[in-house]
Length: 195
Image (tube, rainbow, N blue to C red; front, side, top):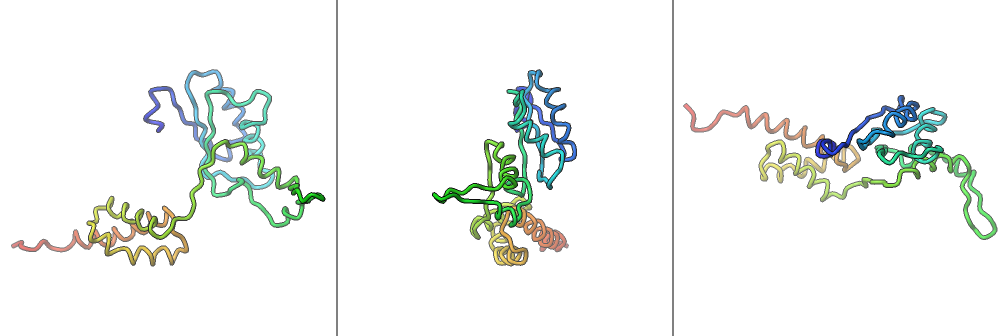
């Protein structure tokens, strides 16, 4: 998408977690520019007390100036609330006489950052059929025939069982391994009908 819209002024700035403390400076530099910017943070998560956490919260929703119109922040994370959650924090939750639950301050603090992202895209575990479709796609991309792909189904299922997951990453790794073993063998076989 960046390449598609670059001529219309879209720019991408990838910011590593260690550099998040510099977000206010980055925002100041781009706020008055005519281009549109995406600040991208890959595999974002925080431990308690990390300085980048507060900087990210302020940029997303908490500063006096607010977010510039020409900026969006995209982040990927394997954590739902971007921070580790502990069972002991659930003990802080209280309920009143009507049964309304009031989470503790620690939980509210952790949830408050993830709530500042307006749009969430979640990737849920695949069912078996969807996993096999993805395996088939990648096997096809690696040059395997429909017959070879069909013959690989059992092995693809064993692969997912050994890893305890049916994710896109697992399907990709299976396809790479399987095609690597079988395509090499097919290429190494002498052609029939030769001299």
